[in-house]
Picture: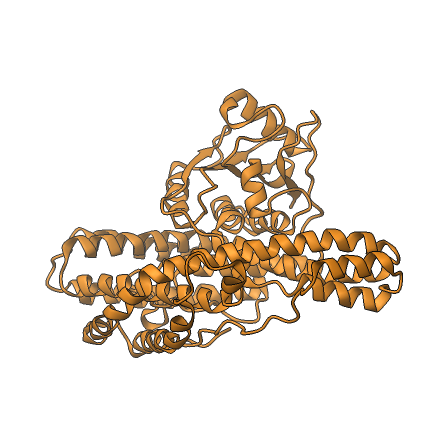
Length: 502
């Protein structure tokens, strides 16, 4: 876990680069001596170390359209309302056009067939002859027999690694299981959806998969003997594509920084003044230190920004590739400062009795406390009742945004919410066996709302994601995830995704 102010710099060097594509192909095809350890080493050198910046997936600017398919009325109206409301927290990429939660009380042994039959009968626009409709994602549970599943259109499956045998698919299916096992279907489905389509988590999964594939592929080639020569030519083609992708991403980042950096730098002093002018209890010393760390990190990139901003827009790819990490770091800093500025403005407006701002931030707090109810319902009924009381208190206060004691009441709700969060983290940690508790939110987080971090308050959407990740990791390590992923359909349908028992 990083410290509160720890923003890691991008690596300046990522290992050996390919200098001659022709030479690599020629040597690989001409000699059987590139075998064993030498073959593996050569392949690692050719492929290079995967870089996190190559796997960024940009979230959409609008909330994904979400609906619930519950043909047997398993869910209550209140549960459905909360599920739809909480889906707005998932930052999915543009490729995801529709999110569909699906719950069956009864289903075939192969729940995949039930999904296909149901969609063909009830929603034919969402399924084609051989594939699911583009842009669509289906996250669901079958209760008899017990199955969890994730399916998607081919464009989504390709973009987010949700195809047969993709590790991200199995992780997404497994993320549903803790909630489903405990009878908390809404929490399970939310965990599965956020794992499957959240842009940041999908990017992390692709990056980790790329690192493992690089090492595994090298070992396989080292053992593969003379086959290495033939495979190396294909490897070089992959290197070319990787280089092109890296250059394209660097150009996009460069364009963003060129339009944004100077403006952000000019506003930095006024943002700093705003950060230190806030007086309410919503802002503590830790939050100010959080901002100061970000401010200092932004100032530290000035020299490197100057070095690459002189690159002409039509410069060769190599000039952008060679500075890709520094350009990506500059973009990250610009985005974080702009987000922090917006979050500081939220705090300022709440502190200064802006009625609309107060109502909205209490609405966000209420949504988070609803998530607490999901988290608590299967482990501590008393905590679940307390979460509902706090949610009701937030709603009541939102109807009195100009009350003279508004801030005192707001901070009291946050104090109690922080204690509840701490309690639930302890209960969940006993079950998920995580080594560490979830991180507190930062002033530059996109999901920040007024009250995040107050008195140690870790929002429940963070706690829920931490728990589902920890349980999936525990089950994966112990081999208890309920078996492999089944991607087959009796009809011969070949849509992407799969299911597993729980």
